[in-house]
Amino acid sequence: MMMVITVMGPASAQESDTLQLRIEGIDTANHPDITMVVSVPPEMIGKSLTSEDFAVTEDGEIRPTIATPIPTDGLQVVLLLDASGSMGGRPIVAAKEAALGFLDAMPDGVEVAVVSFADKPIVLSAFTTDEGVTAVAISDLRLGKNTALYDGLAAGAAMFVGEDGAQRTLVLLSDGGDTASETSLEEAIISLLDADVNFFAVELQSPEYDSEALTRLGVASDGVLVSAEDPEALTAVFAEVASQIVNRYELRYESAAYGANTVAVKAEVDGATAVANEEVLYPAPPPVVAEPEPSPTVAVAEEAIAVPALRSGTIVVLNWWESTAAFWLGVALVFLGLASLLIFTGVGQRSKDPAIQTEKESRFGKSKGRTLSSVTQQATMFAERTVNRGDSSAGPVTRLLESAGIQLRPGEMIVMSLAVALVVMAVSLVLWGPAWALLLGVLTLILIRAWIGQKAKRRERAFADQLVDVLQLMSGSIRSGFGLMQAMNTVAQEVSAPAGEEFQRVKIETQLGRDTNDALTAMAARVGNEDFKWVVEAIEIHREVGGDLADILDSVMDTVRDRNRVRRQIRSLSAEGRVSGLVLAILPFGIAAAMAVMNPGYLSPLFTTQIGRMLTAFGLVLMFVGVIWMQRVTSLKY
Image 1 (spheres, rainbow, N blue to C red):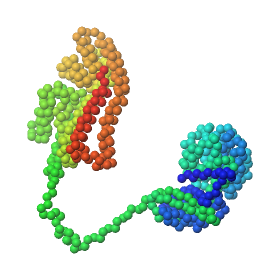
Image 2 (spheres, one colour):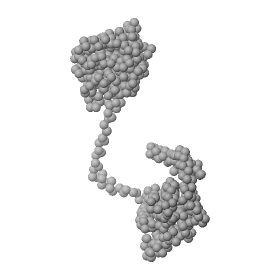
Image 3 (cartoon, helix red, strand yellow):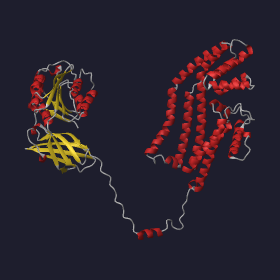
Image 4 (tube, rainbow, N blue to C red):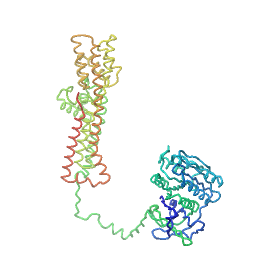
């Protein structure tokens, strides 16, 4: 806690009956044994204070105190004096007189150094116990122009060497704000804290002084700010500072308090009284351990056993999903779902190219037994016929899976998605009930569909990024003498997925007898790239009318390159809108989750009341509409 003292000149001096003690620190680490360091005012200099002269009060109760004077052995003091142009005339003369008086007040053996600052800091005298050397340095002080206050503080703090300790003191005299320092105020504060010094700032009031900066220095370093209204008050100010440096006492007492407390200290000797107050944070009180209740007697225990736990006729009503039947149903559904997942994991690994796998090679005709695998295969066939309506190559699910690069048949994907949803519903049914089971099951299917769609979009963007390189490779291959099929084979071997995979599939389909134009058209539909459709049309026209295919591919490549540049620019310009839409979509759920953690019962009316459930459903619908709207706004067609 910073102490602020104002000292006036002789003409306006006022005396007060109560003096000011300074509490330099309170050590509560060994609570309840407390150690406090205080410094007494100048009026008590030369008076030998004992333990009986001090009183420490906690919550109005006086604590027995042991007071010990702190010796000045090892004390180091840096006098940091302002030598700027504003100190010219009477201020610098009074400052030298006050500094010499301060020097006389220091006991023998105290090391004193003198540093001045104007345009830059100057060390006038290093640490020495020779009072004569220090006095000459003070007397020879010369004035400059500017005020490098913060540089001077950093230089003064750097004078201290050796081990850190409370015996380090820096006394600053300044009449103006900083005008020339390379060091900032924050860096000056850090240098004081790193040096671990007792800081005293003497502020000579003038038109140029910066009280705010000195106050921040004092507060940050827990120092003392002494303000002098005129140069004649400097002698009294330095005497006040000297007394607080050399008249320090260590007070030890046993505390009876815990937590936040106010400690009052009073020193009284020969009719002079000095007081101080400090807010202290003691450790928290120890936890209260409840005494165990006495064990019941054998007779009481026997009597308690004789009382039935449930009176005759009492009926306990359980919801259906809390019953044992619901639990075992959930276990069965989990087993069925996991078994389906395991089976179809193997199915997906064996089905590498479902579009060209013949019906003869399909595994649906291999299993004849009434096993779990046979049941799942029949379910897969039914799902595939339903979604594709008999044409396994033209259904929407087939096209979506092929665009996403997922090597599963539509029926397999549908049954696997239902199996995952079934597991989620079973776990939700056991834990939270049928309503949550239905909601999470539907949400699982929606998330799986969204994941497939996102995977397809990423694959489409990757193909679009590869298209220019693919066309350049094909054009170069054709110019070197290769035919179209050889050029596509080169792309299949040299280019990574997805372009390499798609051209490899075109190659295989062509080798199996499919027309090249049909294979390329199907590929264009799978990759969903408008630019590649132009490439397919150009190849088809070339096959009909002839011409230089390499030149045609170069022309298309230039157009695709320009479109890609525009596409990337549009994507960059719309990035902020997409991120904003994502944040707006996630934010309500994030806030709801945080509120549910901090105050679990706050949102319960939204799920336990009819109007709450209606508002929740309405809000979710609006959220869905908003997400779709933001997606439409930020998805530009060109």
